[in-house]
Amino acid sequence: MITAAAYLDCQKALLLHRPGLDYSDLSELKKIITTGLQPRIAADLEDFRRAGNAVRLAQLGAILVASDCPEWSSADTACIGWNGEGCAQANRTYWDDFLAHGRETGRGMFFVPTLPSIPACEAAITLKIHGPVWYFSTAADTGLLFAVLEDLFHGNPTLRQVLIAEINTDSACLLLWRPSGTPLPSCQTLKELFFHLKDSRSS
Image (cartoon, rainbow, N blue to C red; front, side, top):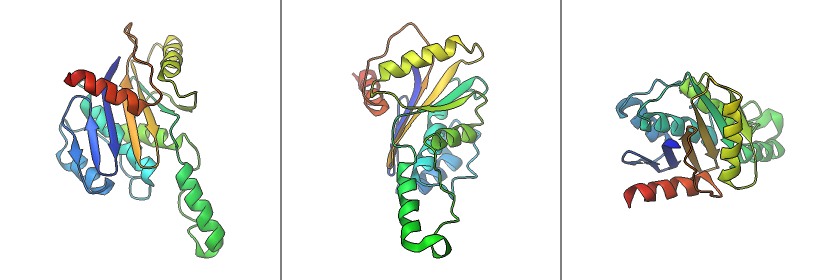
């Protein structure tokens, strides 16, 4: 069962249960979230300033999902990054800069999120999630994803829900999933599943 969800890019955010948000860039969305979002979610955005888009999208998307959930709790939540592009663009940008300018004149000392798990880890840090954090890649099938999550829950009775993040260079989709007997439709991406659920709610 999906209890909350958000899809966002660099200029708009859509939520499963609440009205969407428009903004000029991710810094403006951060300001909206930190000054006016209700309910207020305790969040650590210390890494936001130096982060690239993938991490920023994960951080802000995680806060939006938590605010969209009527019973948010970080204590019994795991966080999983699934498919998407992770930090591939940040790695390419860093490598191109290094080739062009070298370590001395380039941005070689900048923080670069080199692992695909980093956006999910930053989302977990942002929300102070107490459960485990993973990244995994499967075939483009949410049915496989939810089958893996069911197995995860059988092995960990302290978990109640999983924040799932599919992060791309310019967009992100995050869902809060809880086990239930109701099957979800099989989709290729979380974005596709989000819009299916959103359309189902409005029809």
